[in-house]
Amino acid sequence: MNNCIAITILVTMLGAAGPGFSQGQAPEAQAPPAQTTPTATPYKPKFRGDPARSEAEASALGYMRVVLRGQREYKKRHDQFAETLPALAGTGTFTKRMARSTDRGDYTVEFHGKKDSFTLAMTPKQFDDQHRAFYAEDDGVIHAEEGKPATLASPKLK
Image (cartoon, rainbow, N blue to C red; front, side):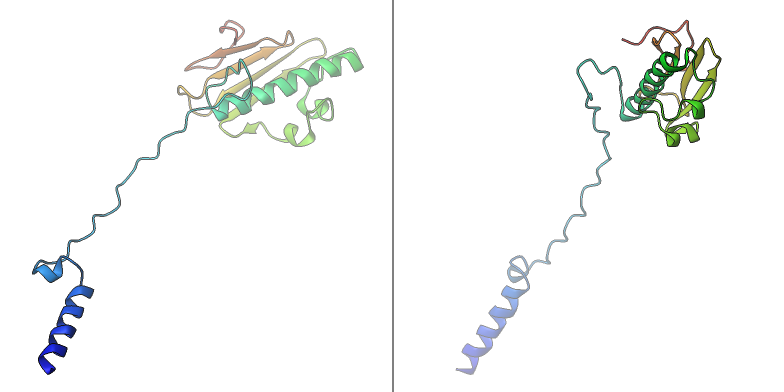
């Protein structure tokens, strides 16, 4: 009877140690989790015909559209363009907060205003395939350029 109990205890202990151990083999070490490189998720267009290639470009273009719309509305009200971004604040959807800084995440804003014209440029802090430069004047047409600051001579954004 004691032998039977001893065998039962031994079998139980070996079974608890794992299936590989009871067969006289050392338990297998678990493989470390596979290292995965973070993959950039592809940009999902915000609307039909969205020309942006990334979230950063979409934000920059959105900012430009708000400024362009605000300038158009400002000119209708005052018969001239706003000469500064703070002067434009409160017109349309352009807010004081938007006028406070020229730092717009991955982009820097450059604005030059006169009563009869203005220029607006969004230049990326780092140029790559996800960060093009943008430029617009009082005609409201946005131009884009890869690898260097955009100008009036840059191709029109489609």
